Length: 243
Image (cartoon, rainbow, N blue to C red; front, side, top):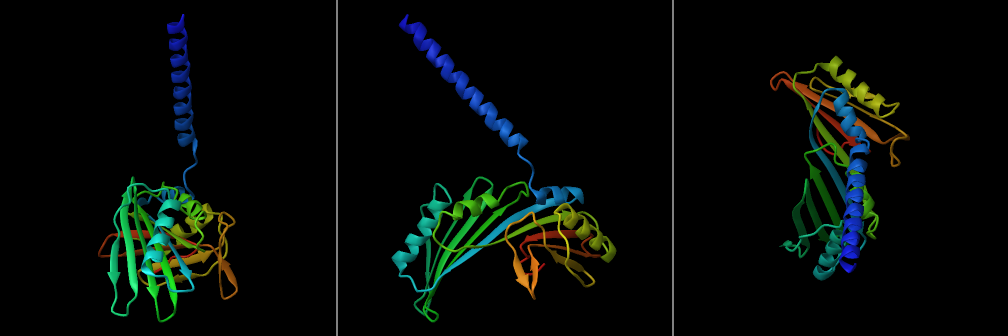
């Protein structure tokens, strides 16, 4: 009788585990794709890279052990395993630069902390990069909310179209992407090789103001005759750096 009860208990446990795994798999399959992935799909673009750049500041200079401790707190907030080494660079001014670089599944992380004795401040930078636009990088932002630093977040999604695009074509795909994101407003900026427009959409919570105008998404496209291809960028809230 005891053996029968044990077998039944094992059977029930296995059934429960199987049901849980099936539910998790269905949940992942039913999860809606990211709006960036859908935007690239709508214009026939191949996803190249998804990137999240975050930074934060402390208004005093940390000592080396304090700086390292803060970096470890950031790592813990991100729930990343296997981080054991840290790179240390001491500058001629006496300031420090500590950094971690590591891989976690599809994501590549770079975390650094730096001091500035002249301004009496300390800075933190986090870069997360993935070759997939399907990856939900906003989960990284949610994890960082556990950290006590006041982080600023900028997302950049890059895709490629395998043919040259003139000004008219670039304008058209920018408009398609902005419509897919429910964005309105903005002014088009362009030259011979690139076109760009910033706009506002209720799809995202954060935004910034530029000359009293509110923006939280920017789309750009670059193409030249020599390369015979077009690179498309979606930045949220704006594109940081050159494109």
